[in-house]
Image (tube, rainbow, N blue to C red; front, side, top):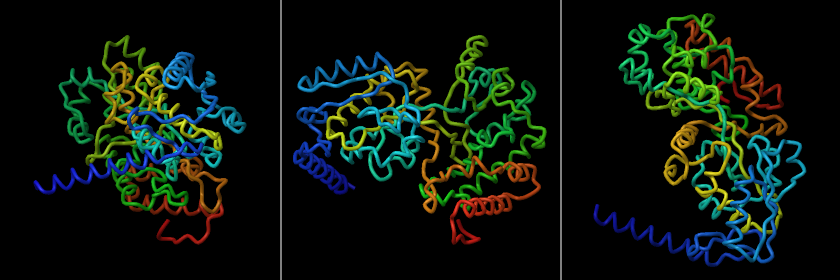
Length: 426
């Protein structure tokens, strides 16, 4: 073991030396991002000039002042504008822009790949699950802010009932005690397919996690385990699917549910203030050491291709992803949970940042055989709820439900120009 530690230390030292050597060889050619290890910042090309979009004036002023201090030989044009619409993005109005990741995916070939060195310095604080395939073949986007539904628990009410609640097993084994005080053990409904999505992730499945458009993962063991979880819920809740109310938020706000998934945090804050309860956002209750993963809307910075100042652009983005700059954002920032203590944020915002580490970005991949069709459209366009209701009510098994859904998926792929499918495989 002692020798192993020495070998590991030597390997790390050699790796660090190679990194420093390669960095020292980097030339400011306008395409490469060159990092100054001693100054811990990216070098700026001579006569560099960039037009940079940020989301508010406070952040704009911070960027201007920081840039002037670090790089007085170069100037930036900093404009304030919220996230670009799809039509606005088509015009590529700035060198560094803010875009929704789903929109940005359509223009990935028109963005600059900042390279692996920039990724190692800037991208390491971005959870992989929120990048999806955007950075699979290069560093094309710096994901920066996030929104969407989150799991929440009423910590005050849980404590009042004297419960320990970390897993779904905890919830269901204490359901009789829970029902003595509140009406809803678990808010769930089959009325909206997108809202139901997280429950299908109970086995570790995520839509198009392979990043291959024609492989949705519906034939996987992980998806089957999610269906089995859905099938188990009827036994615990004792309510037919048709009788399940749409009460994700209403039951929770009225203190009739201990846990839920909610989208309107503004309304939640009002209820929290009136009730005096403490709402805690974070991962869902776990099932077999896995947690449910809702979809998240992701926005971030992209760099127009052929700006000629890739290293300077990387330096701008390094500054914009600094803890100081992130504290100035209006939206919830994206930051890896392992580095969250570096952020200069209040505890409530840190809680939200951490909670979104358990979400997944909407898939952005298209069908390989028909690039005009986004792979995620299957889950939006095809009604899976009759199958899922049958699984929940026990009319069919999870295995039978999986077979139905794989069949529906194959039909959809065929309709969208995908040929040569095998009946037994995606």
